[in-house]
Image (cartoon, rainbow, N blue to C red; front, side, top):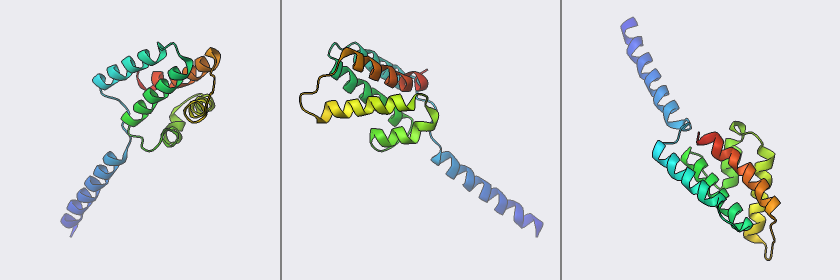
Length: 130
């Protein structure tokens, strides 16, 4: 009777491991993808138009979170990744600025506002692309 319990226990443990491995989040981004994301980040922060810098910076952050396995809109990804991030309120404020740029007409973004947003988005980039 005891010989029958071991194969069943092993099968259950194996099944549990497979489910756990498939559900856990990726913690590292492959090297080549990290290099491309860093290049995109550097291109985004090099732009001269403050509004465009914010838009492009959030696109890079969205791609970083997607590469880590988070799904949904940027806001949903940010909620999922929130426990892993610092300065989360600043990132949310940067995202709100990005939404205003994308959805409101004739919005003017100062260099200071853009710099604050980029600094907040940089926490995502630097945290996950080390």
